[in-house]
Length: 115
Length: 113
Image (cartoon, rainbow over the protein chains, first blue to last red):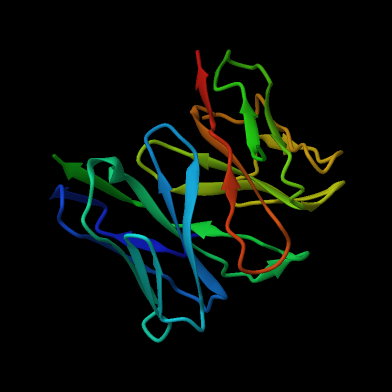
């Protein structure tokens, strides 16, 4: 089942520029999460934003959430070559199942930072 | 250091053969998950387990089987019934409750030869 969809599918920018990725989802959520995946590696959790939060920061990352539009954005400021990776949003559309979340992941945005 | 260990990193399967992918975590997490990722695609859920000795099918469980005999371990068997098993397999775990992210292993790349 597809819950989150990222946009754009691919993004290429120059080092030092800001990168913005968007995620849309279909049903109500408890939280939305962003992950990074370097090529051929596992996913790394970046940030979690609760449904009652509108904005959250972590270092050079800024995440916004608009529950009325069912959308979120991830902004990476002052991008670096090391930020080159795929970025995924994930939502817990089904709430807790036996006490734990069941996340559904989007297709991802492939970000390339050019030196 | 705590984390999730997946092994092997690369696995080759012959036609008609069953293979088992290992996933071990020392994070004391209750829930564990198996995802499949095809090239350039997102993650699709195969199986998940919230407690020991219990597990549920995900979106693409056909041709796969799992067991959860210990809290730390959640092995995935790719059976001969899985017709297109070539993919990148990711294991993840999380504590119970909201507001926790998943911790992922480094993945196993399975190729049919």
